[in-house]
Amino acid sequence: MSALPERPSPGVFADLPADPPQPFTASRPYFSASQLNTYAGCPRQYFFRYLCDAVEDDGTYFTLYGTLVHRALERFHEEYRRPHEGDPTTMEQRLTTLVDDVFRAAAGEFTWAVQAELGRLKARRVARRYVRWLVERARREPFEVMAIEGRQVLDLDGFTFVGYIDRLDRSLESGEVTIVDYKTGSIPESAHAYREKINTGRDFQLPFYYWARRAQGDRVASLALIQLKDPRLPVEPLEVRITQLAPRRPDFRSRNGVVTEDELEQSRRSMIEICTRIARTGIEHYDVGDDPPCQYCVYARACRERPAPAAAAFAR
Image (cartoon, rainbow, N blue to C red; front, side, top):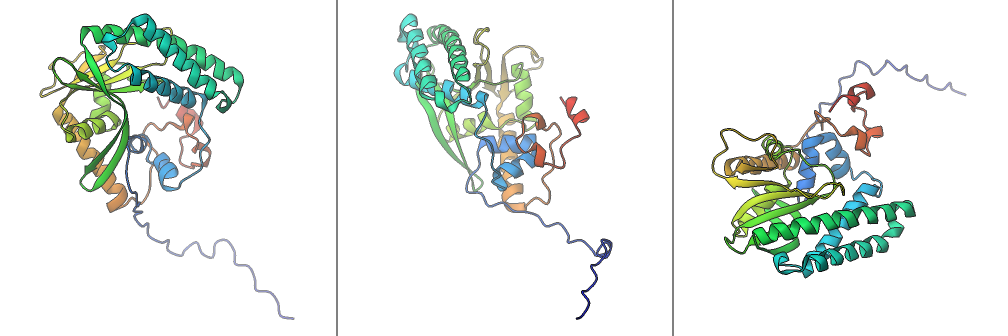
């Protein structure tokens, strides 16, 4: 019987040259603002989510809560296209009824029944504050809701972008359009801070919607984020008007500000640059972002490049 060959020691292949890294070119049929925002925050998370098709969980309570609030508002504005013409009391009752309907229909999707009930009660309080703000805003500046959850498709330099706008409002006086996005999570503290996110390539959602609507011929005058997170606080949107020139002395605290057309154009170019790197040039390694959202990332345990726990605690 011949002897078995000896197993090579671990160091036998240590001196062999490693294969040179090769750029990885992703073949994607389309891009979305959410994908680009993920890439801007942490390219590594983008790699896991969109290129590896890694399995995620079914979502958190907060994700489901936000989805249901959006659903109730969608149904509400299908009925109330011109809020200034509606009766405030009737509108408030209608929206709270719709909140009850969507939360009770989705009760089985929550982990615990108490989550569904607490979410419903919270959303009812938010709904009442929302209607009070809506009526005041609509009577001051009458507008018509021209689209709800409107699907947007935009081609930029051969890349297709797809997204959904929560609400499009058109002023009945000027005809100008406001792009509205509901947020049940956190938003920047001020309009200036939001403008900085656009300028540093950390938020592409509303700039993408802006260019999509411009391509449709709309005169987009402003972009608005409506925070629907805390039922204890009145609804106070963060809104930026689109101007030619930046202010000389920006207000660092106000929730009303500006963003220039040049800044939105730079955001458009950044969208194209990112997509070019991903789908045409290729990327050898998807690095972890400068301020990665490791605490909330479902891939954190599989990511060997995440910051050490001590560093992550002070990353923000």
